[in-house]
Length: 232
Image: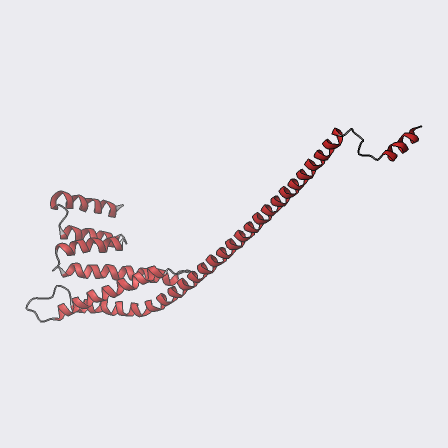
């Protein structure tokens, strides 16, 4: 809560008195974000301040410090994680390399002969340079492990995708086969119905012709005699 209140106070002061463009207030806000472990917000705020005052080497040092701390915490967390996130590790390595570059530039600047004392102690900068270099060496192990895990996960996803694709193709083929069988069965039923209909019409036609000719006129005369004799 104290960081939220402090940031709100700084933000209000920045807007009310400095029209949102005071590097010193932004530095205070960056420090509050740093103490609150909001290191990404800290870096963004300090970069705003650096844009307003590009010659302030304290801002560069604090930006480098925020990047170093973010990278270190991320790498520590990822090294202990059961499943490592390659994108997070890669971002941490990139931040660490950039921090090393900042500290190196500050060390070179502080080591130049000058009549006035350097704004940033070159020895302090060298200490951070060594820390970044050592951490980068260790980070490569974490990065390689995260890359392997990412590749394995991608291979599993691709295998699953291919399996689902094959299963879908089999289902589609089975559905098409069933539809083809249903169409063939309907066609066979319709053909049988047509043949039966034609046969029925033919029988009706023959039966109608027989009735018109006198009923049992189709039977031979001798068969009629036999039938009559049988009845007597």
